[in-house]
Length: 79
Image (cartoon, rainbow, N blue to C red; front, side):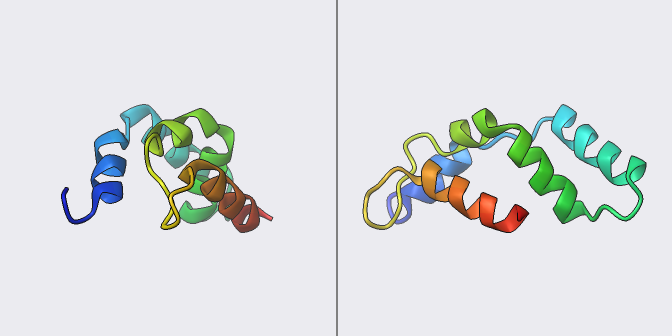
């Protein structure tokens, strides 16, 4: 925690509820050809508030809020 406070904060914020797993798995099984990565990215895009909660008080290396950086990276991955 002392050595990597951002990682510690993220892990404290991070939850992976069963409902989330069920939704992602349902997408994989009902949309033939959808990879786990695609289903997970789609879920993240559809649930930005969850991602923001995970990133509360997490910063970039230069001290900025990590959420906008994550959202921009996610947008690039989903294109």
